[in-house]
Image (cartoon, rainbow, N blue to C red; front, side, top):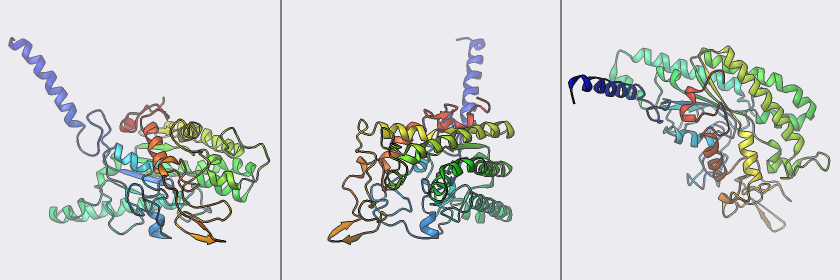
Length: 384
């Protein structure tokens, strides 16, 4: 091979090598992935990894039994979708921001708290506005700390193994799974019409939160819509709607219709945010369709009746998962023998088996707009 042939070949190899090196550092995904250095999550009990246990009351056993072998602060027998997101990006599971024991924030923090809503005044005091305030304070303190310690490499390294670096905030993935409790609280305390009327204001507050994160340097957003709330066994049991309002899979149709309305408006709002925040990329994830698909295919996917659940009781005697009671000789509260056969863990939250099934679909991009996997979500088109 002559020198005139070898030179272009060597240049090509060098270009490819430099391209691969440029993608290094941070999380997983390979040379063509996004290499997220951290995840910052905002949400409710669907993605709470210990906040409610740290702040208000412990999420007791048998929660956590399937995967962790002990309570992990999750309303589930094992892992949540946010855990599978971390696994997919080759990052550690997120520590809850409110948890002060054995926490590690090196690759992100979880601000999600059980019962949280977008608007204040719901089940939890930790609404999205509070979660945003916590994030801003967290980021500010870390930046201040690193500025104070930048003269001492030894001192900075003491913190670097458990705290993100200031530059990680602009390279992180920002995930949202919140809004279900805004609808649920509305159904319990107002009418369906009033819930529908409240959706624009709910999404106005969501948009303000995204704008605030953008001002703080956030650039990549992964947003879950709300699931089919009318398919939760708890809601099916306690629904007081007129006969005939259940669909073919036993879900409360009017509640699901409101959820779909919320999701349509959320998707429209994401389109507006794409136009307003030119340097940001958004992936809208249709979790509703993924969950409804699982419910409709429950038997074919190896699950029992989707209206059944594994832990706790709402039949005959109401007792939450993690508690037990004996009424007239009947023991209430014992978990089922095989949680992996149930879509619902406790009547409100999904089992690990269901979460794993869902994660395998949504993280691949099959239910995303644009259709991009989470590993490549930083490359999502801004105006698809």
